[in-house]
Length: 479
Image (cartoon, rainbow, N blue to C red; front, side, top):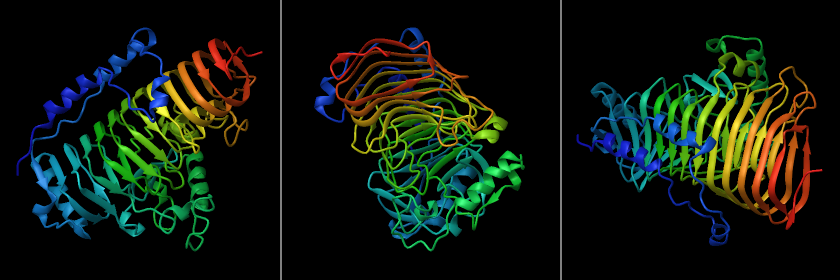
């Protein structure tokens, strides 16, 4: 079995990533409205430091072709062949599990250290939507709460150097007859054939377990719980790469790195319009690069998280040092979102040169938390953001869901937005802090919202700075 050494290739990609690439635009009209690129100085000087700290996985130059283990790629159940290929790679010290062109049906795929699942162009992995295949339960995080639950479809736990690459297709198999109806009434699958089993009782029980500090190993939420697994979850891993693949029809969140150090998500497409179909949710991760991706989702495009309520405070690991650039966002509840599972905090986030637009895009930039989630959220920098059509441009909301019903006030400060252009919005701002815990240091500069149905609200903000901002063709200064 032979392969090429990806180490030199991947290291060269880090060097390329440090040089800003030409952004991809949703339309030529949007592209023409963009301001010139700024340099990496001031607070943005941290970006090269973050990129240099990200280590890409080192995968041995050794291939394990799925067809060599008996797979034909003719829509057969290839579960056993995936398992054999991963085990042989493990015994050999690592390598690439190569999925050549063809169609493969399978249950969960569990990767180990020093392995890469490479889905070649023309290859399709279709996960079999039979929940019993995703047992026994594994340690996972579900809506910010740790538990023992259904295995994510592609999963690695405590692995170093792990990758998912290629130009192929990965289909999670979810639709309004499988997985998605477990959400219950959600406006997407109200006419499904589901017999009425939903996640609601188990979700409430899990939240109670977390608040009561039940040990994670005793939180059993597998069969009968109806808590849907994510499509890709790398949990407590170091040096993670997800590159090139197209991911569709996820049961739950699409890409979900948790408690990882060194995460690169590059040039992927997530296309999933089911309930909770977030595109990419780095949670309690450090040193993250998301670039060149297309997100078209039924929920948030990118949602940066760090655990929920008491469980997030127990783990107490923020997401920090995140660079998002040259991405496109279409449908979604939000383009760049922080929260709502944010109790561990988020800091040092840099978004630049992204384009988002859709009549089904609810918000451009959004921070969502409340007095139960809390969270220290600071040093968030956004520049060169081009928005076509959106409902709300900037949202910072302390009243999300439970609102002012808790003892953990959010601590949100130093949010800087510059060079934002929006063609059309229903509302410019929905910014609401608490009187006792206001948002501090919100800065908006050199920005244009060309058409807005209303200005919206900015409440309980101290240190608000607005410089060279126009809305509906007129200079804007909050009263």
